Image (tube, rainbow over all chains, first blue to last red; front, side, top):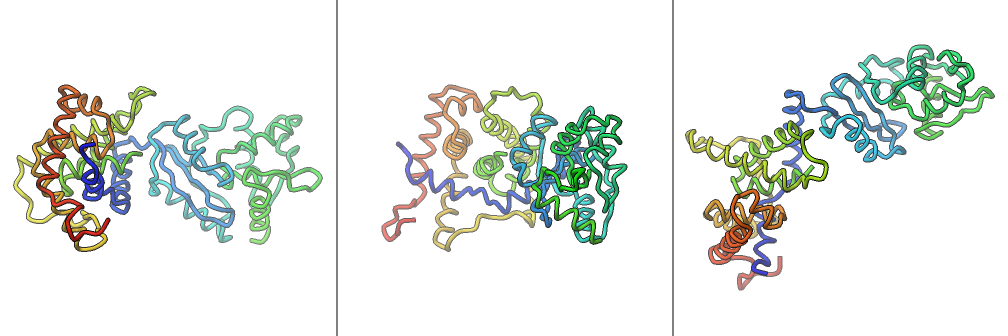
Length: 204
Length: 157
C-alpha cells in the first residue's frame, strides 16, 4: 500500500460532521419540497403507545406505523410502493403531530388532516372509510357491526383483516373495533396499545 | 442516503465553504433524477459522479464572483479532539488544497469515497491507470508536504 496513515488522516481532515449533515439534510428537505420532488416526508413522534412513524405525501397523511411494524421496513415499503424519494422532513407533518399530541392529552376527539388512502384498496378501504366516518370517539363497534356498516354483513373476518392492515392506525380508529363477546380483540400495535387508546377515549 | 460520503468528498474537492452548496445540489438533482436510475446502479458511485459535476459548476461559479468577505455563518468546521490535532488537520487540508485538481479528485473519490479506480476513471475520463497514477502522485505529495502522524514526539492517535 502506498497509503497507510495519510488515508486515515484524510478522513479526519474532511469529516462528515453529523450535526452539520443534519443541517444540510433539513435544507435539502425544504428545497426538495419546494421543487416538488419530496414524494414522502416522514418523522417520528413519541406517544403513550410508543414511537409512531408518520409519513405524508403531498396529498396527505399516508402512513402511521407502530414500532411493532418495524419503522425501517415500513419506510422501505413506502419507497417501493410510492417513491424512493423519501426524506425525514418533519415540516409536512407538523399539523398531524400537533393533533396527535392533543389527542393523547385528551384534548382532541377527531383528526382533520387530509388523508392519502392510496395504501388501502377495495373492501378494506371501504371498511376503514366507515370506521373513520361512523365510529366516533369513545365508542366501539363489533367486527360484525362494522361489516354491516361496510355493506357486507358476512365479511366479519375481512373486517379483521382491514383493521390489521390499516395504514393509518390511531387516526383511522381501527382500535375502536372489538369482539362481539366484549373481548378487546387484536390490534396491529399490540393489545396493550389498543387498551391504552380505549381507556384514554373512555376517560376523556 | 450517502450524505456522509458525499460531504467528505465535497469538502476535500472544494473546501468547507463551497462544499455545502455542492452537497445540496448533488442530492437535490439526485432526487430529481432518481426515478430514471437503473435498479442495479451503484448509488454511491453515481452520487459521487453527480457531486463531481456539481463541484465543477461551483468552482466555475466561484471563479466568476468576487471573494466573499465572510463565510456563511452556519458553516460548521470540523471539531478536533485537541489543538494539536486541529493544527495537523489544518496542515493536511492545506497540503491537499495545493494538489492539482486531478490528483485531488482521484484521491478523494478513491480514498474518501472508497470507489475503485475503474469508477474513478469513469468519473474523471481517462484510463484506470491514469486515475491510479494521479491518486498515487497525490498521496506521495501529501506525504512529502504534510508532517503526518509519525512526528517524533507524537503519541499514537
